[in-house]
Image (cartoon, rainbow, N blue to C red; front, side, top):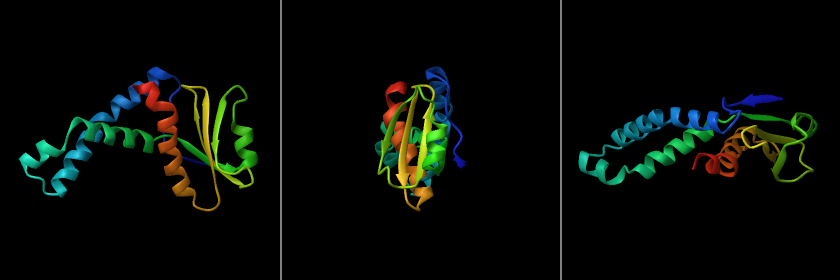
Length: 137
């Protein structure tokens, strides 16, 4: 079993705090990306909206979510029995990527065959959409 990412907030308050903490980094990433794309001041003001920065914050937060990868048996052993499980994919696939979200007493999981890094990135976005988007709105 392997662990990828850093964040698995214990509750809604911790999730909000971590989300707020990535805000300045998201702003910097957007600003530096616009600079690399050679946006002048007018284009920056027109194109870099609050929605753009919020999208960057969402993506940054999602990319930091802790995801574990392992076998089906490791996954089943790791799931707290009282948590709801949302699993995508086939039960016949041996490898599973999962995020335990104590803040929502939920586990978001997806099966994969051999593309672990892609599974982790996809699962991080799915976990954000299924768990944290509602908590953070």
